[in-house]
Length: 149
Image (cartoon, rainbow, N blue to C red; front, top):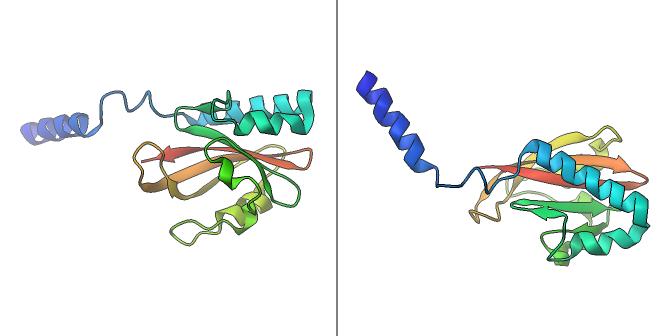
């Protein structure tokens, strides 16, 4: 039994690529990114959204990126894909059929809430479970998610 457990432990170590943990943002990192984005918005207003969408943005870290939607649920900033700006967040559905965009727009609050769905992981290029921290602030929805491969 000990030998089997030892082999299982070795397999688990080999199955995780070296540096994989460093490539991933944590839940606390996602929450901090949203807080930084809200602070930037409070300081600069809607002009901050362009910086949040820029490819070299300070609002992107490893696999973490910021997204913001306005009161009409239109994406006004997206740190991973600028083509998503203008899209209807509430209409977004994941590969499993979950209307996660509607969940985000309905559940987001000033205190923040986590919303679970499936999304394309930018590191593995596979659909994986993701949870996003979404906060409602001044009529906008600010969010950032973590992947759970």
